[in-house]
Length: 579
Image (tube, rainbow, N blue to C red; front, side, top):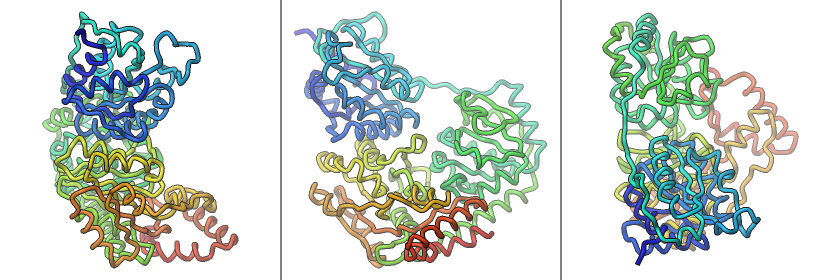
């Protein structure tokens, strides 16, 4: 019996190391689904929404190196798009199989017909539709190879009728190659950079995801030039731990020390970061940027130098050219600021809050304490990002996955599905906002169906917290940001998942301990303080004025209780504003 195209494709997926396809089967995907059914090395993970499947594949790929999701004609494609944007912008190598209507129906406005090329063009590096059996293996190899090497999404459009045709052998390779290279700037640029560093007494390092494999090299460079090391959220898990020179994050989620370090230095060195918020970069300092993606150079800040290279290799080549600095006064001052800020943070960790208004900082800190040493954390966009960034600690073994570049809601729970399947030996903790988990709530059923022992922590502040804060800082009264939620505990239990509700701060630690002791999936619904603010590392006068204006408007509108709660709940932030 001859081999079908779908079977040939399955063999190629297995050869590339793909172990799962996250998808909902049906119609044009049925041939592929049947080929997977007969192949034990590849699993079909039945998600409830293709968007959740794409998010899961994104997390899987970030942990395993390559993952796959699929969507059938029309709506299946459209549901995939948001999760694929997340994967693509996160640098996650994902193969998306977009099955289509039969080739004879192309261009006829057939039932569920979509234009695959147009639809996925902006969230992929490779995007083609096979029209016959000879094209499928060649396009599949190219889509996977592109996803691996360019670190993003490769889309293979697969018509349902082609998937059922007889497979043919091709002249080019059906294998994929996971090759790597060390890339450093040319010698002349390294010498120029070394001279720049040697001439400036106050140097600050700011690192991102590009430092993932360069922890030791960054620390060695910081020690040599007495430089404080700040980092983006994507760089946190790689630069925070075992680093006596770290001063935390800057940006909307950050703390003052990194912001101060960058603005008080003579020279800022950006290492493997495309940190997007230009207002947080200094405008009157010399800035050098090194990145493996040269297209990133200079698009966030005015540069004195831009260099093309991977961070690990570049620092190794640079260090022999550097003269060790002896004056550590600048570094010591920034470390002192960082220590003071962390001391202030303890106020919220020690004070658990009030009934139905538990401090989210305390919740995050307790989760951090009970989570395992090699836990994988996934965090929703918004206020969950803040509490994860500030209170989940790195140790070199933990991982943090979020929609850090695409900034999508609803990512944490489906990300956790992919993480749990990719790394079954590691604990997975999903830090979800009530707004986020509501959007893809149905995929709790996926967690139960595959019995994934995910710890789902819901920061239930009954609002879109970050949006509320944004409106208030702009001087606008918050409007239509409140959430009238279901009982998330009852929803979880109706799906067969253990549910725990915590609304009394005295029960906080016991409830989290119970959740982490449970062997299966568990959802913890914590009623957090809806007035908790995330103060940025640099408070501008216009932000203070904006908050004052919005509070006044709310009072005039009769919301006296809410205004009072906001002031009372955040009085501990006053030293940050006036320091």
